[in-house]
Image (cartoon, rainbow, N blue to C red; front, side, top):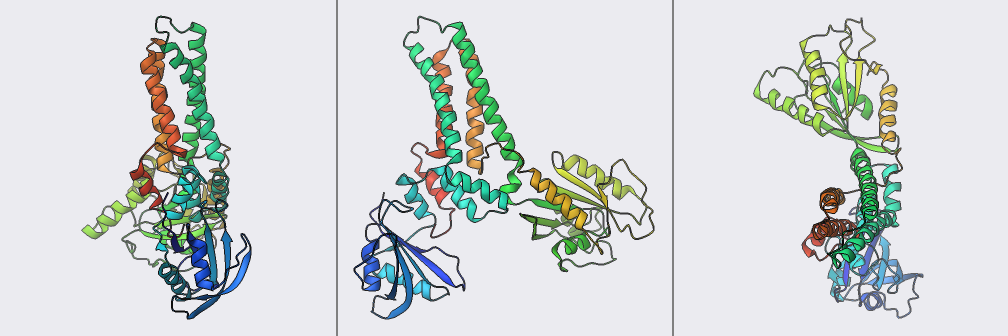
Length: 446
């Protein structure tokens, strides 16, 4: 790929017990020797050594591990330096590596080199990037499997089956005066339909499980003063939102993260939905409606101690119109007070008092999120992968008509496009701009 030797800090900024500096390229070992004033490094052995800067001043006592090419993440010579963590030590060592001939790596450049050197494909690279930011244990397990090539194997299987079908067509084009045997057309149609079924199932499962990858978003909605902020505080176990008897206290959405079960979720406390009294409140209500659309789960909260009114009915109408295909929990709050809320045209999932316990709601949220991982279907983990499968399905759909009309050149064109789309998930044809954009979104040092 490149003859440059690159270097970067691979651990997060801040104070910690250790930090890791990674060097990759032809000069990695020689730079390590200059840093340590040592000549003997055995591959894959941890070596304790002093680290010196370019002026010969001692920086730290660190552990160095040398990975000889091609047995490293990038398939190049790699040296990893494990030093004491902190703001100064790692930066000083990084500065010394650059003084001895390395170049500061760009974001994702180590992974990009691993890709170009054949160590990983794009599906594995994306799994590595998302594993770092996994929002649940289930997501981490899925990504770990994909990092080891499970999605690659699935994609290659689909791609090979399309190529197998394409071979029949290409051979037949050479004998254009002869039509494909009718039984062969039937067999090809059956194979295409099975491919379509498999890819459609994967696409559907991937869309349904997006929250598993990105982190589930839960919107708490209701009219003013039903206890939304109290519910948020109870879920967070601290007073994040201001609680007041004055309606309209929360005038904007408040978003916080909390772990429920094995999932890290984002909870949004929305402004009370009602006829807006002023411009600021109107904007807050608009953001509440947007939160409903963007959420994976909606918690619709109602006050059991007040009679149902037009605002409650508006909430129900908004949920039904804006939360289609989402999980919705209808919750009756303040059940410790005298009940006055009559039953509307909804079935409540639970009744609670947010000032005492929200355990039942927490369990319900966890059950919903756990269901998202109940499928054994292969999962696509990025919009890029989803778009490629969508385009593959489009080309398969458009191939049926020319197949039946014996227009094999058009049929082959669509199958060739399908092959390219599937290949783009793992190892695309020339597209440097797309690769630069994708790897540029990775962490520095990864």
